[in-house]
Image (cartoon, rainbow, N blue to C red; front, side, top):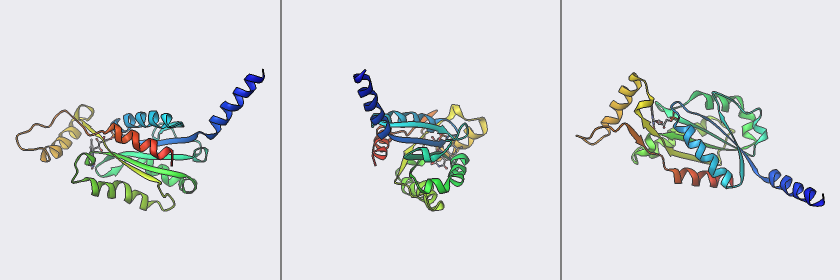
Length: 194
Ligand SMILES: Cc1cc2nc3c(=O)[nH]c(=O)nc-3n(C[C@H](O)[C@H](O)[C@H](O)COP(=O)(O)O)c2cc1C
């Protein structure tokens, strides 16, 4: 009996001191969701407990229940998806009292010439737009172009943009994958330990 009580108290202490993380994000074509799955594994390996909220499907009851809130989005036409932006507006006061980190998943991260401006436009500008949210870190990740996932109009448009950046004579591949899993894991492990 004593042993059970002792074990229960240890488990209680471990659970109590675990960093509680919420990952709140928006994705249009699923790449950010796949990246978030990897973030969950990395955060758990760093002894955090994680809840995931794809914001168009569900929202956390209260951000006050978490030590750290990761807020992110895939980028479309230079913009975040609308749900995480709305989420920040609706929870601005609570988020200003909590540890927050922002991340984006985008195509520009795959092109070294575009990385600086993309970091500025997709992350620094978003942080500046919501005073009160002072991110402890920003994660800037390459995403993926998977032309099968798009409808005809989007496929045609995006292919023509990508084609302009493809060396002459080369075909645009059906999948262009810029995801750097080591970078994603490393950022997540670091941020949950901040
Ligand atoms: C219609 C469309 C527009 C896009 N516009 C941009 C853009 O303006 N800048 C950028 O860096 N990446 C852009 N991308 C690339 C996406 O950010 C990338 O595919 C990312 O993985 C999307 O994440 P998601 O699958 O979670 O929506 C675009 C992709 C699509 C399909």
